[in-house]
Length: 250
Ligand SMILES: Nc1ncnc2c1ncn2[C@@H]1O[C@H](COP(=O)(O)OP(=O)(O)OP(=O)(O)O)[C@@H](O)[C@H]1O
Ligand SMILES: [Mg+2]
Image 1 (cartoon, protein in one colour):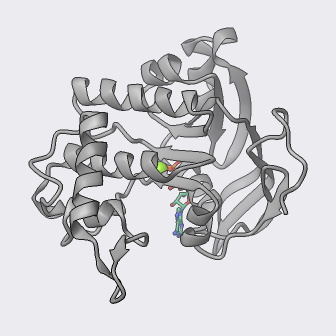
Image 2 (cartoon, rainbow, N blue to C red):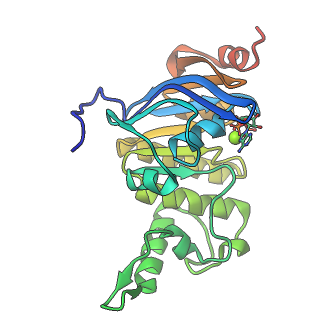
């Protein structure tokens, strides 16, 4: 079924992606190869097109032009659920959790566990698995049965990250996952992201914190006003170079 793959076949290959919203070109000629077991950071100022790229890969938006390949196979996702079936999980900047639902239902959104001939929701199982997962990741929430709207911004972010971590099999896209978090919570998320890399997933992370980018990323990809300015190996660049790539000022 799948195309021939090996370690050098990128998990995700973007070729000349363009995304236009009416007259606004959000992203132009964007190309990137993302490999298993690496973290690539996507950086750029507000409105540079970072979230748009995440949404194109996750099936929320369809590209205006260009191709997306997953493990060597050209794909086109009609919506986000199709991308999820293919092992792509996203932590969105504008959080996508169901506010009125408990944590455990959010964890299993679209993948609810059922039991018996009547296929009733197996709440007990979902609560138990959720609790195990949040404990493992050290996400501090009152309970797996807590309703999302009663959680703090940081706790919600923790739930979104736990969900992505749990279901991803190929690729995780994180759009500013720590923007709302304190120092300790940020450190926990960074640890979780490294665990994903150890699991041999491919990771694309958007962050405005260059400190974080330099702590986590193997490579850094810079966007400015929808244009790809360049990609650098973290070990072979420094903050000054990245800042001047972001701003266009030497
Ligand atoms: N759904 C949409 N409809 C119309 N224009 C959009 C839409 N989404 C994004 N844009 C536009 O595309 C451009 C890129 O937006 P995007 O959200 O990708 O930026 P970003 O790099 O994620 O910025 P930030 O750092 O502020 O999150 C902006 O000019 C934005 O106004
Ligand atoms: Mg954004």
